[in-house]
Structure formats: structure tokens, C-alpha cells
Length: 594
Image 1 (cartoon, rainbow, N blue to C red):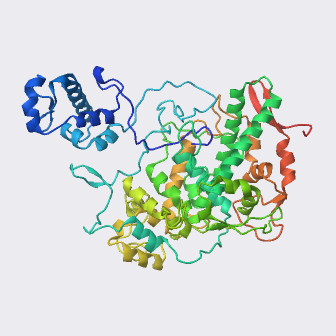
Image 2 (cartoon, rainbow, N blue to C red):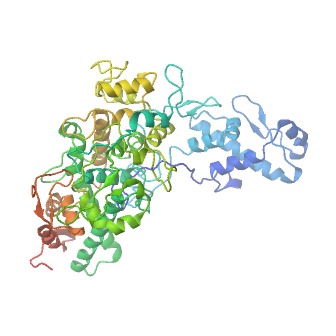
Image 3 (cartoon, helix red, strand yellow):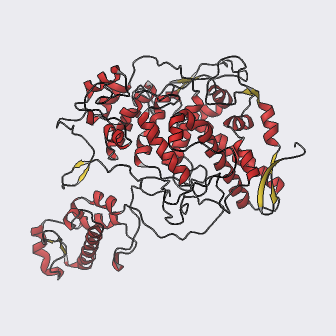
């Protein structure tokens, strides 16, 4: 699941794999076969008129009705008719063997639905070998099931898909109907009436904006990164650009240090060893600094997410699937959208306002030049600027101006989140509350046993004006509307969804950085150094800083409070070297600073 080698990512596959359908249609994708066949299907009366040319008694037989599916074609295309008939029959047979409710007629009439369903679950043979390093695409993390956590595999689900019946009688359409039979409110309507605040938002959180950046950075890493590529949204705005840039710099810095100490290592070994350290540092920062502030201590305890202070982690369980679930990728991990600010202050090395106005969020979408012009001032600003608290309210820059290139052509991110959830077949808010043992609302109230007990009365009042039934509330809308748990950024539902997911990331990761398994294990001396690392170290090593608070996700307002001199950390970490010791690699402090 962790960066730069994309070890445990799940990406929903919207294309079908190439497979051999029959000897005459080898290497054609299922969707391509279907579409080619459909292009040659015509009215049955035309087919009947040309059947004496084909020599085919029954081109394709519907398994349920026993009626022939016929093709109209000229005598010159008899071979193609036979080939496509056999292809569709093969597809229908394959569908039936998987227990999917498609007949050959439906193969022709609904090719896209068939193509998607027949390609899931994704299956391909893999030969895994024991290695010290993760694969690039995340395969072979689990030696018993090499596809678990692999990129370009379908998202698993915690709950069955919730779709409405389509024209073929299949449950394949996004929800549009309320539980009471009326029309569901549209995604844009919900966004404007419930998630939009037509006034300046307050930024009084105790968390810095660096907290929001880290959450987005991790969410992109584990939900939608394609194997062999970086985050294709790295330039979406300056915060993500900055964090990605810092880690690439850190990777290269570590590779240079390794090369100094191990001049005989080739480039691949240097790359893999630096990558291995970077993944370990990201895992450590996530679980030691970011997760406790996101979930609170109770949920951290419930899902066994606290890290060890010493020794090895021995909890790897090959029965645990580390894949990111559809619900987390599509809803829970997107709580960070409500943390976003509309503007960002630029500050100098003393954390005082720098020259120039704040940067506006709507002005920086996919504009890396803005980051390059203001990198140091912007990144320092994220250490003093507060994020917005998690709530139903999302800044106008994301509600009306997302990806805007000129006035009036922006998109709506909350509406995207709501509609994306429906498109992915996510069950409503109440269903996920029930899944995690939380109270389920049967009425629009805050009653502890029958209402929206973790929301404010005002929030519930607005929900009632928009939704007809408590069971209609979309999961993302409900999740961001809950009051945060004590010591947490999110409410009970998203805390449980994320806690369970991060449990699986840790306990289902054969390469978890604290593991004692060989050959991937770090030495205890290495682990000790990694456990001493904080995100403040990374920022000090790669930004122009004189002082920094040790806990960079938390906002400190008193002058000089909880700050340390950044150059001290630079000297400490510059002195860390990796040297070869009995085929193990040990971090140590060099006797002499270089």
C-alpha cells in the first residue's frame, strides 16, 4: 500500500483483460468481441432471408429461452458470422459458469455490463518468489493469494453492491429512488443545500493544514495509483505537489548516502534499498503521527493500531486482505475534502507573513508553476495555517470552482463524492452504521436510539429538508456530518471504517516495516532509528527551515513553543549512514559529519 513502489494499491478496473475466447478469436478482449459481434447483428427477418447462405442452423442459442439469436450477413462473411457466433456462445457459457445472470441475448443488448461483470473478479496466474523487496504493482505481497492488494484489481466490498434494476432486469443502475418510492435528491442539489456555506469558513482547528495534506497524500497512494506510474494528480494543487516532491527528494538523498557507503551496489540495489527505507518512514509517520489524530485513542486501541516501541511486529496474517475497499476509497478516505482551506498564507523562515497575498485554492489546480514560485513559503505556511474541522461544510473553491480554468466552468467535489458513491453501488449511511454496530436512524431526530445520534440537531434538520427517508442518506454525506470522536478528526462511522482498513493494511502486509520475517526485515538497530523519525525530520532535511514544531500536524500558537532548531535535525540525520554488515544493512551515526 505504500508509496513509490506502489506496494498495496487497489484500482478499480474498468477495462477487460485480454483472453483467448476461441482459437479463431485469440487475444480479443471480451468487450471487443461483443461489440464486433453486435455490429453484425440485424433484424431477425433479414437474418432469416440470408440464413440459406450461412449454412448455420442456429447461430447462437439463448440458454434460457432456447430461441436462436440470428445474424444477417452476406455470403462473403460466413466465416466471420461463425466466428462471432461461437465467441458469443463462449462468452455466454463463461458467464453461466460464473453464476452471472446474463444470457446470449443480454450479451448482445448490454455489452458494457457484461464486459465489466465477466472481467471481475480479476484472475491471472502469477509466479511469486521470496524477495527482500516489494513488487512494483503490489502483487505477491501474499504468497498464498498473489493478487491481494495488487494494482488494477477490483476493489473488494464490505457490503454488497446497492444498485437499482436496469432495463434488462439486472441490478446495475445507480440509486435514484428513495426508500419511500419518491425520487432521490440529486448530487448537486445535496451539495448546494447541505455542503455549501455561502460565507467565509472558520479555520480554528488545532490541526495544521499539513495534517490535511498528509491524509490526501496517503489516500491517493492506497486508492488509485497505477502500477509503474506516480500519482497522476500530483499537480492537482500545491499541497500534494509539495509532499510528493519532498519524498522524491528524500528517496534520492538516501540513495546518495547508500552509494557513498556501498560503492559496489548497482543502481537497482540503490533504488530498492532507498525505496524500502522511504516506505518504512511513510508507514511510521502515518501510524505514529497521523492516525492517532484522525481516529482518536479509543479506535486506535480497538483496531490494534498502536506501534511497538521496541522489538519486532509478529502479527502478519496471510488471511487478512490488505486491499483498499470500495467504501474506504470512495467515501471514508474522502473526509479530507472537508479539511480544505480556500486560501493559503505564505510565510518566511520566522513564520511571519511574507510579501504578497495568500494563494487561492481555485487558482492553483494543476498549476505546478505556482508551487515552484512559492515552494518554501507555501510549505512553511502549512505548518502554521490551520485546517478546517471535518464537517458537512466544504469550501466554495471545491463546491463551485473545482478545476476551474475560467469563471463559471468549475466542478463540484461534494457532488462528485455523492454521485461517485452511487455509481460504485455504495450502500447508504445507515447500512454502514449497522455494519459497524452503531445505532441506525429510523427518524430525523438526534434520539440516541432511533435518530442520527452523532449529529447536531441543526444538521439533522437540514437533512430532513433534503432526504425523504433516513435510509436514503448517502454514506459520504452522513460520514462527514458526524461530530468527531474525542481526540479524533472524524466521527464514529468513518473512524471505524478507517480503523478497520488500517488494521488490514498493517496485519495483511507481509513487508510491514516492523516485521521480523526474512529477508525483508530491518535489523533492530535500523528499526530503532526509523522509530525515532518524524515528519519534522523530513521537512527539515528538504526545506529551508530554522525552527519547526516536532509534531507538525498540531498547531502551536505560543512563540517558540515546542520548536527545535531545524539544523540540529539536519546534522543528526545527515550523519546516518547505511553500511553493510553480514549481508544486513544497519543505520548508524557516522563518526564524522560530512
